[in-house]
Length: 130
Image (cartoon, rainbow, N blue to C red; front, side, top):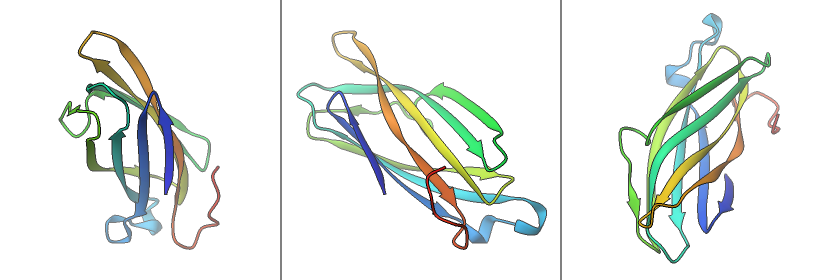
């Protein structure tokens, strides 16, 4: 489990290797990542956009930007949390993801919340944050 708090918003990430969707002999490895965002601040916020930086074991970098997460732009009231699951394929047996969420307040203030860097490793890989 990986977690980081920015501006009173805690992001918790739990990656999971999906062996049943992976084909190592073909260089196809798949992970799910389960994310929970907890609003520990005193104001409501809305998740507007996401940014991901994905780095595989060969150092290849992919950047992904888009509106919301899994088709949603959730509003989190103080004390609420939002959870979702998404996935990431790689051509290598390990990698690294990190990112940020652009959040907005009712008052029109926009700010970024960090998603902690988390390691994508197959069960037999050496488990270390790259």
